[in-house]
Image 1 (cartoon, one colour):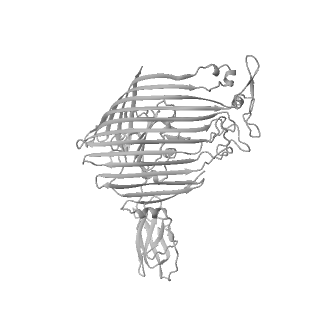
Image 2: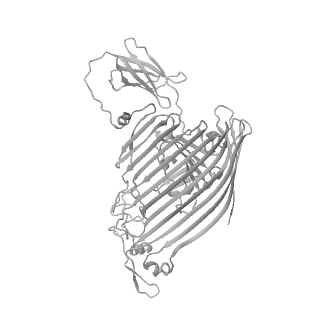
Image 3: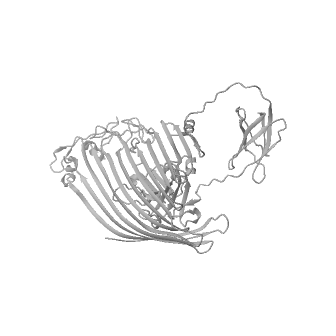
Length: 631
């Protein structure tokens, strides 16, 4: 269990460099003796917006004009009345608050003729879902989307302290994100999981960032900081998001540079030696034409699961930074350049065995573990080292008051290496690495039509290319591996030491075969995809209450997959004894497969709204279909 205490400072007006120092340096409060002052009682009543009394509200004096502070306050009684004794004469800040109402702050003057105060609190509306979304490639109210959509504003995520996908999913119905490590996430939409790291496999849940797919499993985990909003669509979204969205889509919209000066800094400390920092700075470079925004995040925490044979496990260390540049060359042109960088270097992940407890320990996954040692490598510490970076160019050109030409150009790379102990014990039986890398390029051109009339829609074309690989080395001490395969022999002895079987009988001759103390082999899969898509989608408002949406997307894909096995320089004796592995030849050039396919994806949907000002969605009906041909 861990906790974090955060401190935040922000400014949206004109700022100076001294603001940064003031935000990071604790305020020193120095007490000094003061002369006695005349005091009075402050009385009054707190009311609701309807004029009814509000019992239980808190009323306090927060600051006085001479700088004196004190625990001066009261709570309203059953009639909404309060009385605060001992308030010095002069000017003060009075604050009134109650759950579900907006906090009121008022300056009051206390004197001999102070009259009772009447304070009326306004109701506070807490909106979990954002008001607008761009899931259909145009700005709409969330109630207008004929699909299951959840939208969360970046400010809301900041207020509740969410910067990671797994914590974010706690607030989204129908979505669960399981982050075993930043290199190994699982996106679950309506009970269906997408978590395969194979370079040849397309994910089933599409993750988008600024309109660009970042769906490959090993590169899809990004920190959620300095965002405009995050949108989650449940159900098939092939028409809107194309390839790899059979189950759903997550759409991340990061903050762009603005024509304002703003500064925000937030830092914190917690147990397990946690340190946390995030913030942004935004400023115009050329007034009303060129703007710059820089945001960063750093979060480090020691491992929360102690490891008796190495460093603590299940910790965190992430550094992420983003630069955003906005250029307005003409009144109808908006150009955004966004560059992201993230590096994750946490300690290893605890795959603790549920069958074999560590010495003087239990199988409880939250208690101490004993992982390793590595039978081949001298440096057997468990770790993850992952780097992700991308550059995106967004151009919006207004062709008329209703028509906009949109272009999205992006390049992205990720590179990760993770070492883990798959047997979850001190036995050197199953030691693995996963070395994954990938790069991609995409270009989309889209024409968007928006009007106050009955029809709105978009159409365009997309090109996508990616190339990646996943290499998995496997290392073992065959003497320990033999114990793992033998149900009559414990993998770990009572004293916590691994069981080692020095030899096994040859099944043909009966002679003893000595097993290797260290054995290593690996497999690698390669995947390359080139795809082109055309799409069209539109919505017609049949009446004020009824709208009909239809869309179509055609895709051509050329996918190449390869698989390569790298055997040990000396054959494994354990496999040879069973007459299998030692007799298999080495495939130096791998095995390649080629698949081309045409895919046609469509959707039709209808939505019905109430006819009052609330515009609540009353009925949503959607059907998605797919037709494909492979050869």
